[in-house]
Length: 209
Image 1 (cartoon, rainbow, N blue to C red):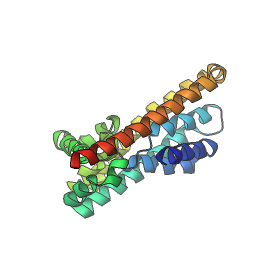
Image 2: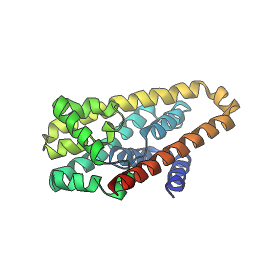
Image 3: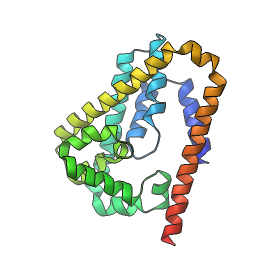
């Protein structure tokens, strides 16, 4: 089920890469739904390298999407509070989204350790990247500071991903030559991702029993 949804969304995006879909999926990625930005920005940058899009607008709209997703998490935590967030983290649905009490606590500890700047540097840290807005909301971080640090962190991360997409375009002939092999690699990675999610959910259900 999860694999099919992930595959369908990815295929839909690959056939509909534009500024709107970039913004939408980056907003999803920046919230607590696990959809990797590595699947969103590099293909868009690849398309920009071919002249179909503007690389600057790709980075801009990807960053706007990331900010929207971060604000979603921020306001949920801000208004619903720590008790709700941690209760939600213990649900099976949260585990399917790769969220658990440990990951939420890790994000909180990261925020407490680095303060406001964590919303910037946390954008480069796996797991922390998607959840760092939650402790910021729980701490009722100043909105101006939150937006500044989130924008800088998201923008820099998107620049890195965009450069990756441009590099891939420079290897276009090589990619075309080994397209089938590369597609198998991405399929394998997708399967590994789904298996990881299912094992994580199973582990937590078993540990609670």
